[in-house]
Length: 454
Image (cartoon, rainbow, N blue to C red; front, top):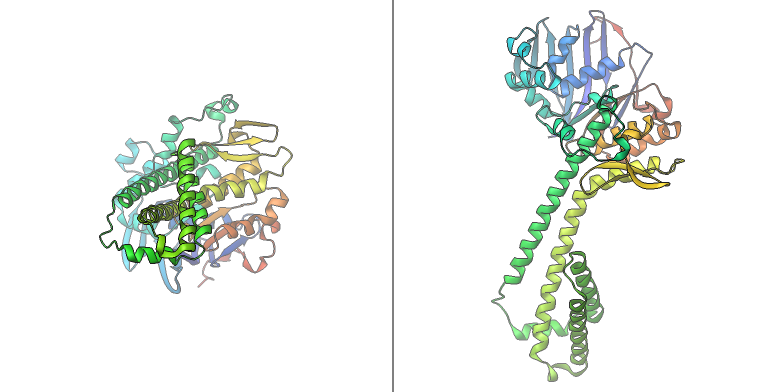
């Protein structure tokens, strides 16, 4: 089940303020004056939908309530209720009660690395409700610090990527480890991991195709009837043109698979030409000169058509698997290729992302992109590869306009919704350009004095 957020109510934040935020089902632009609490509201939302409720210990509040509903039945609203009891959080979720305790004094945490991942492991291992809460939502959150994007704490690909499969681009060798942009390191990891999964899926599709070919070649037609086959041959519509299409498609398939030599191509062409000639003679003379050899050739062509059908299904499956990568590259290059340098984002066969320019085809590390280009690549890679479902999800971004050229801001939201019409976008923004014509999707965030929000 995929869900969408309906409303967030925070009472007694900093012991002074109440907030109530209503979310649209497509896109919500949260705006307001500096200091009104936009980033805080997004951070609280992120802590809930990621299951990282222990982060709420960083805030003083009395009560939080987040309502949500299934995207397929938006009227069936459910609630997550959280009460702050200083060193404890009382959670009501799916009609169950749970207490999360502040564990800063835990010997186990004190004696281990207090990294984000290890703290997450600690809480998730002790409170199963956190994992259930996290799994309820399909989300990505991009905070102001883009390198702080929270990936699944069980997923080790980021650390693995840093020490293995390093990108050997001369252009990035002058970067010291401390000078490398952590956000771009994460993007390299995300792209590499996604590409590896895609390559694995394509390998499985190819294996299934080979198995299907073998099964097709070994099939025995026990209901073989020469009379029925003769009538089938005679009654084909547009037979000659169909045979020519079949020949061209079969030869192309074999070439694409690297299974065809020049002499074999000549043999296949001759086979089809002979059959076409014999078929034309049959149409002219009728059954009086029907030869058994024609039936055997017709059987071979029937098998070829079946192989082509299998190949078509294989290519359709592979295209679906490749689509996220192609969509990402097309989207990024729509934004950046018209710049002065004619930059082009590419991904090589090893899943390594880089860019080239109109001046050189040599690969250049994405560490060398401009700040605005880095914002785009961070946003769209997370939207396309890091949202767990291609059909729906929740994407929360703090100040998406950061470093974006004005012309990019004007098309940013429309391009995002074009990529995924079912996603729920939640933006905190200062930029009217990013909102564009969607003024009806704006939500003004205002502090209310405690006790004034129902």
